[in-house]
Length: 468
Image (cartoon, rainbow, N blue to C red; front, side, top):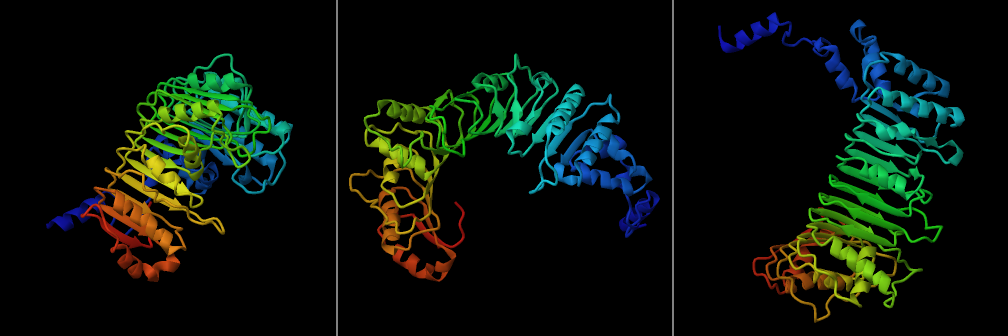
């Protein structure tokens, strides 16, 4: 008997005949099937009950709920289903509770009973040692917002807490020894201290995301954590209606990734970020076209200086045009602190104020990779990037200039020339064109190749495929 025939015989004996459709999934033990079903929305899990007798009641034993309010045409059906599910195996542990507004237009209105029901359900699952609580509401009526029960602050089994558009009460104490992930989207707090106690009460917290609400009752947001690895902070989408000085203070010695997108906060106090690897920075220190930088405002200058010193260990950075402008205005009063560890930078411009760029590059003495993205305002004229006093770029190896790029070919050439003539060890410069300029690529490349290069090994590339 040859090897192939022997394999066919073994397959036939085991019931796994070649060419036949065999239901191997149903042969798995219940606990393994329930673990698989736990990662599927509950609506689809229930549908599995029609597959066979083996699957009829299996959905009841899945240790979690993942429901969208839009999954039910009637609110009473939704309540009845959740109550029935939580009544099954009421002594067993639950791993996940997730309520989410998945539909664009709700089929029913929330009212006080709904708020009470969600609070009641959360209390039930907390007692059953739930690991993941995700309550992602969407309500525009402040009188119908769900208030999370205070028992959430002492759930020792909880691993992740994701909340949207709810109210968190003021805790007397917080003990969440297993929580690694917190995501708070437009959540309201009792005061500054309530949020601070929540964060500090999670001894193994690794990932924290906060999307602010103008009514969140937090003036000073303090993030103090010895375990935190990733922090995302998105500021209020509306103007600071109370005209208060908003502060974000971060003290996280193990932090590796930070995303700051906030035009309303006045001050960012950064401490102990020696491990910071990547930073996305879109902040203005509450400066705007209506509230411009004042060179005589020593307090604001001090805020910007201390912030730059606080992030000085970062290795990889994305920086927005508005942030570059704030730093550029500061640089006209004081020297920008050095970012000695920064090796990769992506900078984005909403206009052509390129004079900001060389000033910032001078503070990056070890930069190796630079990517530039542009968008053009109607009628905007490119500014000069070639003031003669700017120094060489001795470490820069790779430059990418992204689309949408300039209609003014002369300005485009000047920008490329700046890097070719100032970079001593440049290996590759790539210019990305808009698709409608694809046919121009050979002509543009020929022109760029005539520009003198300080680095003799530099390769110049023109492409219409953007990869910043």
